[in-house]
Amino acid sequence: MVRPTRVTNVLRAQREAAGLTQADLASRIGVTRQTLIAIEQGRYSPTLELAFQIARVLGVRLDDVFHYPED
Amino acid sequence: MGYAERNVWSGLVTSVVVLGVYLALIAPQFGDRPVGEIAWQWPMALCILGGIVATIVLSILWGIVAGMRDPNEKHRSDIRDRDIERMGDRVGRAFTVIGGLAALVLAMTDAEPFWIGHAIFLGFFLSALLGGVAQVIAYRRGLV
Picture 1: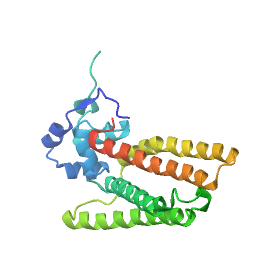
Picture 2: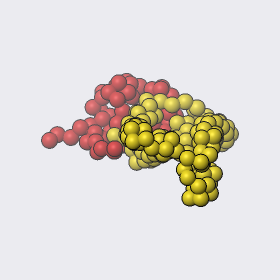
Picture 3: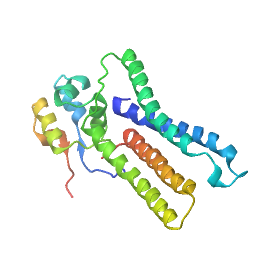
């Protein structure tokens, strides 16, 4: 049911660097604050579209926020 | 706790309460007469209907209380809620199918309508219960 993901993120750090609260960012990407918290804590992998929206709002590249480890 | 998770909890709580009420109505009749003489149809129909209404009412009341505690609370679901709902539906669907198949076999073997009805009812209940539990786990532990 809950499968592990190797995708990690530094969303919280990037959000704080952009001066946004969780509520601000959640509102701008059209999700609830609970969902943003789940993404920051690695409990939910966003869709590719949502990940791009997050990066765009933060003004950074996708891989500045989300990381996938080298094998 | 968000809007959609509250609704899942409301469904879970009422499912368990409804089953308890139904068993309390039916259990006293069980054993002292043939199952064909047990009046189960109306209690079951009323419990199913009551469960649906109770889920809606509980969700609304819980939403009002949550809104009073946090006026910025958004009463809507998002993509994660829909992903979790789909996963819960997938988990629950298996039990609806098992209940339906059990009812089919019982009908083929000329079983009492009591057993056919209860096979389907049990399938519905397990579907709601386990689908809901799967969703709560996904909200709490993650869906990745």
